[in-house]
Length: 227
Length: 227
DNA sequence: TCCATTATGTAATCATCGATTACATTTGGG
DNA sequence: CCCAAATGTAATCGATGATTACATAATGGA
Image (cartoon, rainbow over all chains, first blue to last red; front, side, top):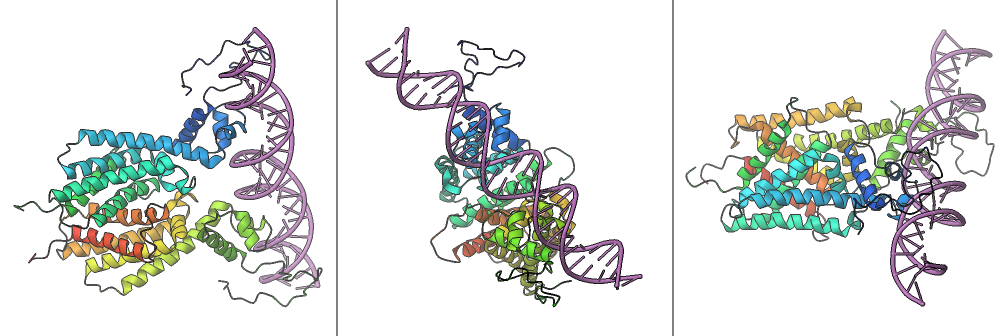
């Protein structure tokens, strides 16, 4: 596969037909596919709508060029979503690696916090991943699989918690769906502008996210023996 | 205000210039604004994207006509959202009117169930209301006010529950945000295709919604004395 | 080494969409 | 009755997704 840092100028005949252009980029881009994905993610992060043409513009390429790499706009969005999902998942896995394996509810908490933290800091990317409005639902097998694995992870954590007698209810399915809904909902509330900007304080929303997750865990956890 | 069932043909001179067209609609529509809003909601409900032109087409009117009633597409979407929000709110208020005033947690449950029931049955309309992606965020004062009132309603219910000593925690803010996040998240999960179609059974998702809400209430409620 | 095949980019073009402008028709009040 | 305001039409513009024909570069086998 072509790398990003490859030599930008193959030493073939330069053919400087126009001498005033500062960057006579070679006819071939090098890794246009990657550049388009990056441009798409960047556009989304800037709050602009992602158009194929604008991505092409950012890659300094003609409007038709992207269609050599993606059959249509949705395919570009799907590729961008896959990249975003990789980053999302990586951050969650780092958080889980740092949490002790023996404490399921602590892992559950770490998972939720990492999830929300990423979603708060990358709202546009989170939306591309989650909404399925930017490209057909099951069009990306990688995205589907990745997501299913994350869900399975939470199921495993909850099953461990149940096995250790840490949960008040045996209805794991409801707990799982409720937890997903709450975290997903909090992320989307932030995204959709339903979280008032409590004070200008940075990190205030992070704090609220923490409070909400802890409330949920307190709600499902079996009360401590002495309480 | 003009009604939908108004006489479609004012008895002015018919001017049948072309005799083969089945419906020589009069030059003036009657209530184009309302027809455009209906068309927009209908298009959304059908899963199609809402375009001004298609709404105009459905109203059998020229592509420029809608702009006599809405300055731009967003304004049309905002008007459609206001209409959807009215229906949404009406259904919730009916549900609350049927719930006993003295049982705050029962009212909380009724609220959540009505909310989810409507969101499940009108996913596209729910999205128009909630997403703020179809028109500028605070562009509709009515929508903002309506939504704020619904939120205030849940706050009141929770405050009542706290006053009656029904809650385990005194952190009403976290409870409120967590509850909103969970219900909102469940609705959006359905919308975004994150709820697997558990069996073809109709009403299965309704059941899941109920389970999730009950789990949440059980989590925040002070345990019964004898338990 | 040559060159032919394939990969990749360009130019031109099309249909659709949101939006604006100039013009036409209808309606309703003075 | 008539004119002004409201409302609809026609024509047009710029942006976009997408397709097609063509141009250029990269690659590998003879």
